[in-house]
Image 1 (cartoon, rainbow, N blue to C red):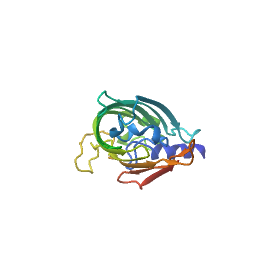
Image 2 (spheres, rainbow, N blue to C red; image 1 turned 45 degrees about the vertical axis):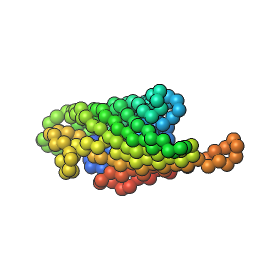
Image 3 (cartoon, rainbow, N blue to C red; image 1 turned 90 degrees about the vertical axis):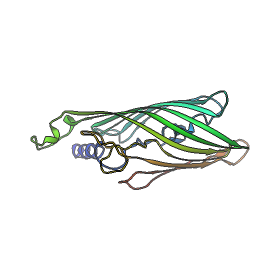
Image 4 (cartoon, rainbow, N blue to C red; image 1 turned 60 degrees about the horizontal axis):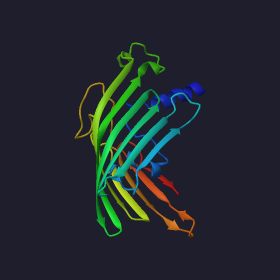
Length: 232
């Protein structure tokens, strides 16, 4: 039974299936740069983060995600720069990304509105020989691996005060999906779809020493249900 579950997970998480593809980041409040380039330089200091997430431990092909990021503001405080690298392994597909971010912030008193752009590369590799299949003559399995290096860019907005923040972003605007408009058509390519994120949060002061910060992320991609992640 465990082998059957492993095969189901492998097929479900394959890079060619339509649906949600962006790595899961439950600790997104510490990893906001991965989903919104406008977040770069939003802190009055340089911030660096490294995180590892392991899902469904014990199942072959279960998702594993590693991320590292750094960002900060330049001397004039209006320009922010950031860099992140991530590696996401799920099923037979491994996805490594390296992106640089640029943001420009406009201040309105205590409020700040940042506009952000990012650009970089995604490297995807699927090892078909790791699949368990019955039809050895199926031409789909003629190749042992499929590799793609896919350039991309994204954009976002990020509004924040000392107590509140809200952002909207599309980290990967360039689609590699022949069924969608504004897409790059290639043969033997992993289908990357656009993901859209909406984030918001607020800090409540429970006492002089204790603060409560609930936050919400909504993630949408065509072909999958709207996903929400609520935390505090």
